[in-house]
Image (cartoon, rainbow, N blue to C red; front, side, top):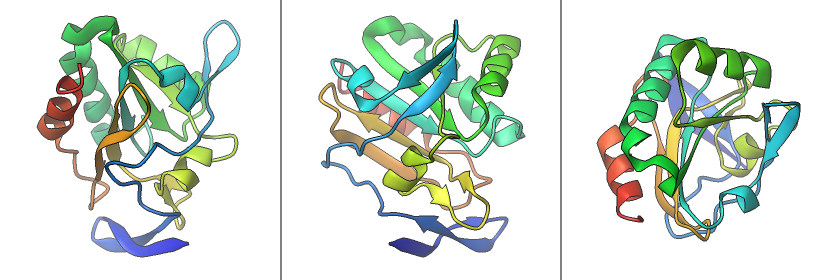
Length: 172
């Protein structure tokens, strides 16, 4: 299943692989990777027990993705360990770690979908033409059920930070 024209990049229609994730459904499976004292993984089971925010970006090497990550990092600082916060992209785990170190991103983990693109495909966020993730935000409750879902229509636009943060804070 694909969704043609689901998002645009600078006005050009693009196709998202998979089905859209909707509020109320259980968050689909995925395996993300990060590098911290060796290669580690993040799966839905790792997020259980706390409300979670998944900030999805095409690449941390682009200005809008950097802004999105820095904004959520700053806004989430007051919530501390009450939540799980993960930035998801197809960047390599090493590059993601380097960016977070250079930009002092301490309130969010990073998860790379580079190995099998299971997040992108299962969550309907993989842009078929670019082989990158679309921009979006998902908020999950402590049981992994989707409480908020946004796929940003124009990949170069920022997400609705206020709506996502309000949904997250409503769960804690």
